[in-house]
Image 1: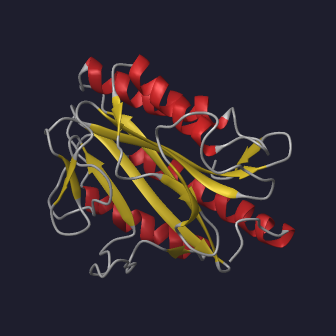
Image 2 (image 1 turned 60 degrees about the vertical axis):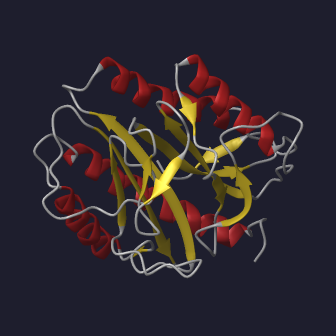
Amino acid sequence: MSAIKTAAQIQTMKVAGKILGEILASLKSHTKPGKLVLELEDEFISLCDKFKVTPTCKGYSEYGLKPFPTGLCVSINSQAVHCPPKKDVIITDTDIVTVDTVIGYNGLHVDSSFCIAMPGSTTTRKNMAVTAEKAFDEAVSRVREGIKTGLLGSKIYSTAKIGGFNVLRDFAGHGIGEEMHEWPDITCFGTKNEGVKLKAGMTICIETLICEGNPKVETKDGWETNMADGKDFCQHEHTVLVTRNGYEILTQ
């Protein structure tokens, strides 16, 4: 596979990105207090069927892990990445919630997530959700051919720190296309003159992996992770096309 996508591949990913944007907009409107997280999963699978796309996470496996059980990852409060929605878990009025997923369409993939602080959540949680989105905006605004991935990480990190938060070290954004995870990794920290030089035609996932405290995570079953200090986590993400003079967000 190539990090530089063909015109045909880019067009396919644009179609897929628009579909995922619509799917997540629908799920976001239903991510409310009183909602069972498995209801979000059911709605997601139904929407995938409607749009004739594949819920890529469901059944996915790597590094010898058992197949992932759901199409969505849903993290609440101190849950971090790769958390499958579970039976009888209900979103409360004080939660901060991240919904993350990947879909496949005609052999290519797109990846996106959103984070919502519920109406009764603390000021810290509300600020955290805002910071995750702001960190994405700061990073993506620097994307263009010729910059290095370290610049994106540095903008995510500095924005998190200004907001009073931290970033995960053990997980990162990534390239995407024929596979869910492709080269290069895009960390949430770095320096502007380090990393991989971006080229027009690359498709990358910028993930702002924001945590309230220490970035150390613990793994429960190989997939599900939790913040080791019990503090909060949230994430904002889009699939982005690198162009000669800038970028295009595909998943909105």
